[in-house]
Image 1 (tube, rainbow over the protein chains, first blue to last red):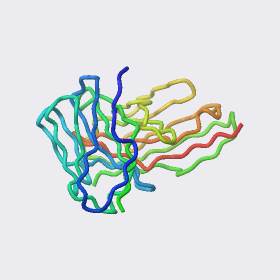
Image 2 (image 1 turned 180 degrees about the vertical axis):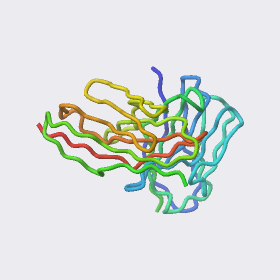
Image 3 (image 1 turned 30 degrees about the vertical axis):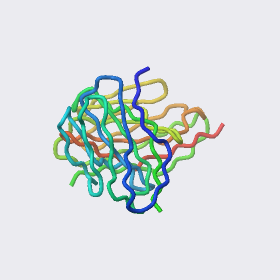
Image 4 (image 1 turned 90 degrees about the vertical axis):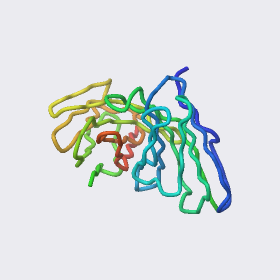
Length: 113
Length: 108
């Protein structure tokens, strides 16, 4: 089944403790991206990647890192999480960076205390 | 500054009562306008892509239209299973910008 898989679904952590949220797609998509969804603000793009070893900042990149060493994987790294990063995170992929809809994972709900 | 605004924030309809959702946008280099449906606890699910003013797409009870500054999602004779949050997104070069969504509730 074609899908985008995120792990974990739920994560509770403390301020400053490094964490990684994994994202994997099995559709051979070139474009991958991360979003956070907050009430009233909608989905905001954090980082995106147009292909292996090519990443760039979205609208809200501060406090986040990404890497794209393999085509299928695009992990989101929070090196020193803070409470304002408490949010619902989505990973998405598309066949290419233009003319292609995004396919989303089911989300990771992160709480930073 | 690129911006996407959706209205209304919430909409309650009786089953069979048709209506429209609005998405207005300002982007410098539109590569596409996308509509998604999001159910509670799930990721957004793709519905339509529109590329140029005047374009229309249909799927079951949904029809999406596009002008130079806004898009409409028309829902004809909705059913309770159409209840969800509908998201609009625009692609400006390699970035995506989303509206905050319209939460639709269809009562039987």
